[in-house]
Length: 147
Image 1 (cartoon, rainbow, N blue to C red):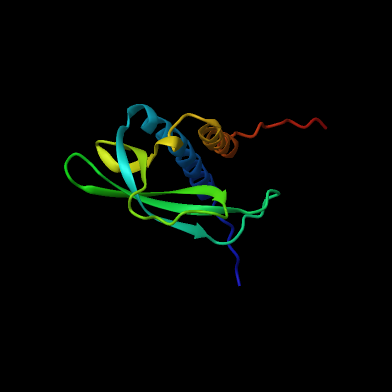
Image 2 (tube, rainbow, N blue to C red; image 1 turned 90 degrees about the vertical axis):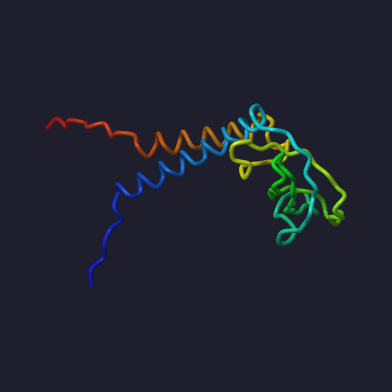
């Protein structure tokens, strides 16, 4: 029985691709804030994900919030986001609204307006992506050993 090692080139390619994805995610949310169109969305569903978060502060949960908005052409676009909150939350009644930003040329890329403001989270995503790309593609220095 023969075992094969993973191809180092494939691993470098995969981790570089992951780094580019982190950079794109961080920059896209910031670009939505500056270049995106603003629309009002109706919150359609709020679900609590799993159980209580494993944090020092007790009683915090992750919620998935789904929303729908209509673009000027009359097409309905759906989106969702995650939010951390306490144990008390309201059910979606179809009347709650929130502001969203989207690209007019591709409205499927959208986010709630509060997530599109430049912040520490986007900086961490871009820095992580740059670090992954740099560290995986870094050339090792050849050293000459003296005898």
